[in-house]
Image (cartoon, rainbow, N blue to C red):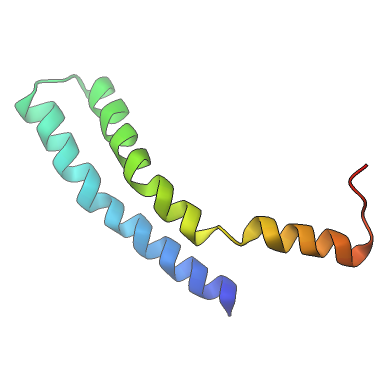
Length: 78
């Protein structure tokens, strides 16, 4: 159930990405006159800046779960 909740949050974040990318593409391509290549690079950069912290929140417990699982099965980090 926890993974399903995280999936739903991630899916909503993915859909919200259109709200970020569309205005960025419009601004960079139509207003500033950037080529398609630089427009894609630009809006991907903006999206990464915005969604970096959101992804950290969604996946923050993955590292803790992995460490706990390794300890439960007796794996040592030599």
